[in-house]
Image (cartoon, rainbow, N blue to C red; front, side):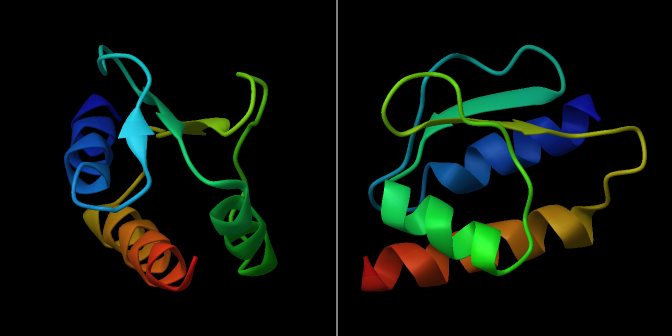
Length: 84
């Protein structure tokens, strides 16, 4: 879970309009994600928490989170950010 959270955080650094809110120390990734991108992710079926003010989201990785699922999320984020 922690390794996948690091993978997600690293990938987020390449996506325009997103940024980490805090260093990743465990399996949670706290990031600023534009609301239009959040809406797009939800429309694609992704689930995540929003409670950290405007634009703040929390992605959680579990023990069974795969590299493929993290890469899929990052790909969707990249595509949505490109049109935002």
